[in-house]
Length: 490
Ligand SMILES: C[S@@+](CC[C@H](N)C(=O)[O-])C[C@H]1O[C@@H](n2cnc3c(N)ncnc32)[C@H](O)[C@@H]1O
Ligand code: SF4
Image 1: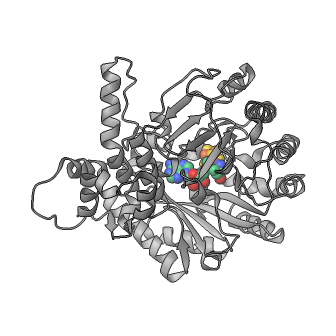
Image 2: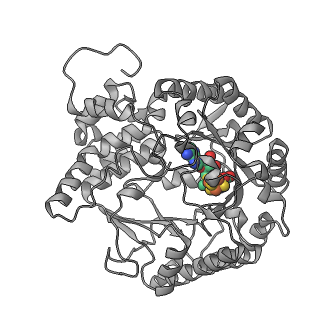
């Protein structure tokens, strides 16, 4: 077991692989689904045959993710740590990209007229920094979405940097309310930390400090919105007391939901900070980082009466079972029930139908995205068609991100038990103390949540190995270890 005396006995290949994975930097890629972006096969944009067009079946639920543009403007490149696609902010370019997002939506409706008027359960404006969108473009896009879909039961989220919720006219929060006839609205801001020196190190002082964060909460609450904030922990050289203080201050300013992210950082990651050997050397080793996670989780669950909905999301107790709880993320973890339309640069779409499914991703950069939309046809430059075992891995990894694999549900979808389909993987995970198995469910332990990336890597391991070998045999390999825990988002 990780961090305890190991049991004697032969070590299976899976257990050895798991130990290897848990010694590597841990990421949050379980939140990004299977396969990971870096493992998605490349396709030509505009090609409608790869795969057969996405089909969104009317009996399935629908989520819409909009990445209006990839731009943001921190004073330090990528805020030092950021692993999301981002480009330097430019107002004129943002307008052009957003025009193309509206065009992409129109093309999707033309291709698939049954989409028009479909009820949407969740609409999420994210990406680089969605709340830096130019106001007129944002209004136009909101109108196009309101005309395209039935938003009456939708939860709508606008994500962004704290100051940009407040310091502009008109406020995007008001445009949201004016243009979208939705059930509920949320704001989601990146706080990262309350420590002013660290915000300076991130180049984020222009995005506000504690007072700004509190004002965003007030702004949202005054309009009946719920408000969420992202915090990072395990920052270079950060003591546990400072991490606890950040969590306590986030609660004290009245946030409804909290996204708590262990900092993903290691030499070679490509972020600004990851190029600084001194900063990399001051990161905690995995066992210490995992203990910090367990401490903060315990602070939230036991001292502050929050509850946990996913690997990284916590909510105040009063939202439990309440219609104003955050639904977009948990619904996106149910690929058996919900499809996803992703619009804009890096937009991810997913369409399932019984025993098959397709996932596609739009180009990341503004210029490649504009070119893809302009030429017509498919906008995506990566596409993946799921084989039966891929669907099982998708189901398991999404369920783990939502903290529970329901064995009966899995049985009803696939006609078998997860322990039957992945016996050696789950044996290794249990032996290492990363999952708990009961007759009803398989759940990650607190430690397993920290090592979730390794869990996902192990479940995908044999399948990825097999794909890679097949690719090598056909000599068309762009072989990479993208579904191991080495590369990809966060
Ligand atoms: C795409 S950003 C959007 C928020 C907005 N752009 C901002 O900076 O406030 C989403 C969140 O991902 C998290 N994130 C980004 N890079 C990360 C990393 N290397 N490790 C852990 N979390 C990360 C941050 O907490 C960030 O708020
Ligand atoms: S954390 Fe937000 S503001 Fe900073 S680089 Fe990433 S997307 Fe941009």
